[in-house]
Amino acid sequence: MYDKLKYASTERVFEGIIVDFNDASVTIDIKGRLGQFKIPMRMLISQHEVKIGQEVAFLLSYPEVLDPEPNEHYVSAIQNTKKLKEEVQNRRKED
Image 1: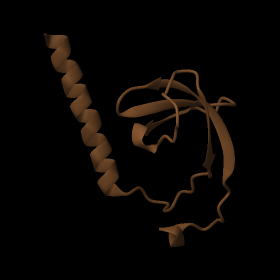
Image 2 (image 1 turned 180 degrees about the horizontal axis):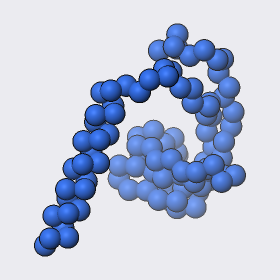
Image 3 (image 1 turned 180 degrees about the vertical axis):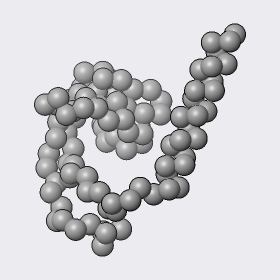
């Protein structure tokens, strides 16, 4: 996979705040108005009980687009997921 990257690693330390969590995932607000990301709980390293408001730090590199063309497999999967969500919402409206 690394052979697909054209640029060297640009890892840097980012900090964030835990804003939500459940048994399966943790949502982190990245400091500096850089957005949010959600990770599986199993990826969080902690020697303490997880609590909302805890600060976290992590290494992250900038994403690099690998190909100018979208992968049709993923495009199709995304479209199917959106279609299913719309169908569920429409059924709920009818009820």
